[in-house]
Image 1: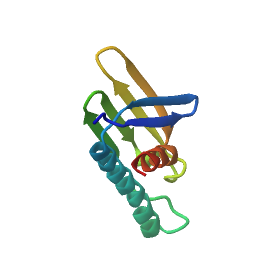
Image 2 (image 1 turned 30 degrees about the vertical axis):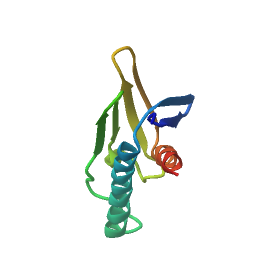
Image 3 (image 1 turned 90 degrees about the vertical axis):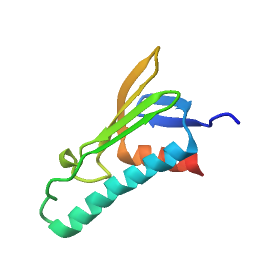
Image 4 (image 1 turned 90 degrees about the horizontal axis):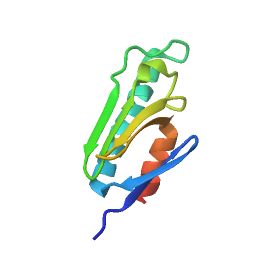
Length: 113
């Protein structure tokens, strides 16, 4: 059975690559935990003040391609405004770009449906 392909939508195009369901579920859990950090910090800090230091998210997957996703929640006001850095590489090509956290989360959810 072939590995399904994941499409990540970027601001100026998209990228498709083979990605396992298990890896997508793991990435979705990491993204959910990151969003949960923001929600918990916002409740703790209240509506006026900015949340304190949050732990950055770094996801790495090695399969047919190497995928790394990084987000520092301390530089964004909310999960809706956050951007994530994406590095995708194999032995012939390396792509480094960014997209919004909501778009990445939506792409992963769509892939898992």
